[in-house]
Length: 296
Image (cartoon, rainbow, N blue to C red; front, side):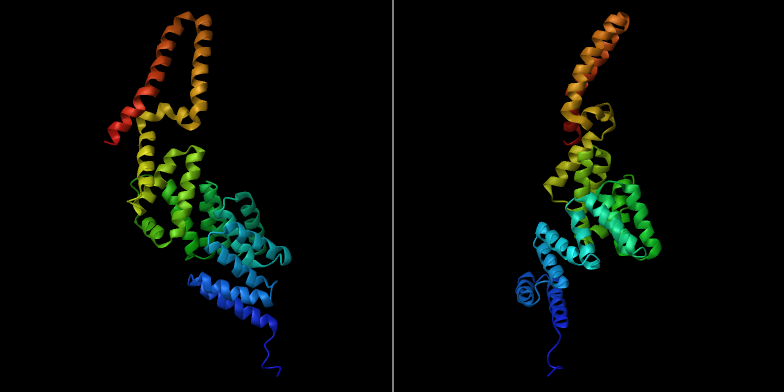
């Protein structure tokens, strides 16, 4: 009789394994049904809850998945699977400070894990700290030279940092084989734009356009950034970087500066006024002309 009745931990483990296999095959509905049955008998099993978080993430319910994982970790602070998955979701959701704290704690507990260094590198990549991301990925490769996770981080760093014309065949292949990295690169491009680094954003946007040549979004973004990064637009950098704030500062600063200069050195006020007005006209007239010329 005893041999015919498996212990509850074994039954929970078997459930978790079966649910995991279904999720690996993207059979979310079947996995949900099996998971519901399992949790009815084992409501607090950490591995089952972890699979539930995986199911939520597959259905783009990251907030629910994060809440479940935090509940698991509160009960079992050393649950590696829950911590590693939480790190991935926090990175994806842009909760980078919390993700970095978690990554540092995990690396402190598992200093020889190349995947953790690579995961931390992805956090730094999302935070636009490319040198640190590259260094962490290289540390992961030092621990495991064939670590695919770290190689992908290095490739993404190369997309952003290497100059135009660098051979990117391997990068295009990597992005084609790993769609999740396309998503990360898209987020990085958006963050670069928000940070005002349009040159790096253009490199990333070009790579995304290569992957999605029929995408109006990426085509339009590449065209816009190509105009903004043209060498004749360099004097426009303050206005591009700070937008309307830069324009207001330009006007107020110009008017005040010319008045002060007129009182201090009237001989210089005339040429300075011409230069300032010339810059204003250039900022109004040249961008649309350049856009029409480049995009015709």
